[in-house]
Length: 287
Image 1 (tube, rainbow, N blue to C red):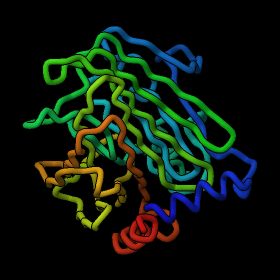
Image 2 (cartoon, helix red, strand yellow):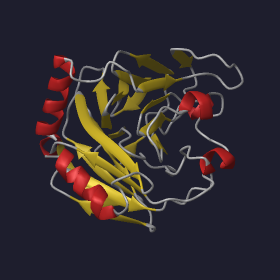
Image 3 (cartoon, rainbow, N blue to C red):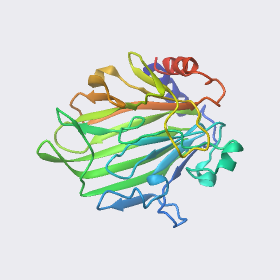
């Protein structure tokens, strides 16, 4: 991913990206009708109390949300046409809207990390970012990108207490999103990230990427569509890759910072009619 990402940021800094910001943010308590930049919870669980179960960001191709509970997983809103949709249609467009071309919640996360979500590893098992002293969700919109963050404070870990910040950034004109994890503590930690899969999806592993393609067992969307998901990473950052039950698990080397890139596509989008097309796209981006 090094060459592609470096080139992308060079274009941004040189001003070649369009002045129109095709990204957006969304964070609000259910029923409030008011968008905010931050929500704090001492319990760490606002899953049922905020719209789309947590903070969300989007660019013209995909929407992403971070679950505001113990899972801190990343979920995907897949689109069939380019454009910003969350402000008008929300995360769950009606069947009528979906017939007209709006996107839908095609992705299924369950108890997994979803698409590039971040947790901890204690040397033997996956550790949820829970319980916490508090959990804070934030969103931020800038000239050509938007971000969402989830800060989980006071997590018990290896006899200590750690604070973990997850940041997801989407960019105008760029399908891929950057996922960053920060360990705000004295000692390095081992992170867990990855991508989930189902019996109805196929998977492909490369040297620095993992792809999935197929149908997710989701009952929210009006119509099931084949969707692709991918995580791209630097192999030098990780000690182990395991294909566990329901998800690939990438276990990092001890660190205080970790970055990966994620992307998704829908079979109704131009250029993504098959798994081969999606994998070819990811291979190119992961160079």
